[in-house]
Image (cartoon, rainbow, N blue to C red; front, side):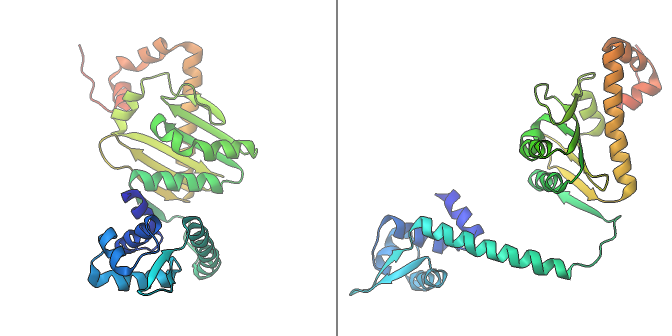
Length: 271
């Protein structure tokens, strides 16, 4: 029930309004006094709450003595709310955009929290018109996979390198299996993740199992270029490794103190 309350509150219902409406769905028509009793809304507040629900069109009065109340059926309420919100979104999309000032392309936006970062990545993917570049780890893939595959079907060029998801393909896919993902995770103190579109915009994120994810989003050409070069380097290095073998590649850096530091981010310790 709490989940239903939370979703209704997102649509502008107060906690008391949620309780009163749900009680009416279960028991109606009933009086304000009975609604208060069944819902837990204080008697001193119930008629104010019912007035707000009447204003929202979520309940209506049943003429009787004493007055009874009944709910708008759930499907009708959801349909009405959906229509109202779609009209609001259409209006805001049109009118807020007109107020938007010209943004500097080198502005860097900071994003905090896994959910917010993933939402921004999905938005970037959806807005792509020509190409998408991705460097993504297995835990994040399910959150963007649907949007990416839709773009693949639309004919966009999608290039990806995936960490720890050997059975997944997102466009032209390279799997980062030439080195344990743990090495990269320890070096960057997290799971460095990149999504870029159309050579115009990039999100560079870092997810961690122990702390909240963060990201930057920008259209700065220098950062877009660095991100694409980073992904391209990983893809080419994977191809070279497949050609000459993992053992030979590891031998290049494992016993070289400078390369060991670059690859692992740790100080070299001789045996």
